[in-house]
Length: 109
Image (cartoon, rainbow, N blue to C red; front, side, top):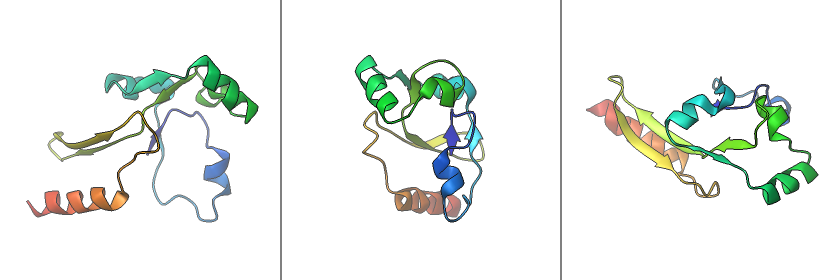
């Protein structure tokens, strides 16, 4: 998992079980930007986020309302991107089982 947030979220610290994987920090969304996966939250949504106590400029530590588009990349050992799943609609995400299945096939090659 890669996140632009400068600190662990309350969700990460309040989970009943600690995360079983490392969270990498993409400060300033620099890596996401290189993949063309960054957008700025429209002002209307900034207002809504603020009402829910979400302040991205503070959480991300960069003073902006920028977010990465949720994406999943499978990169082989040679550095070749084998699968990309990216959709600006954060509600449409591939099932983790799909990624695991692809990884198994890739490993069998």
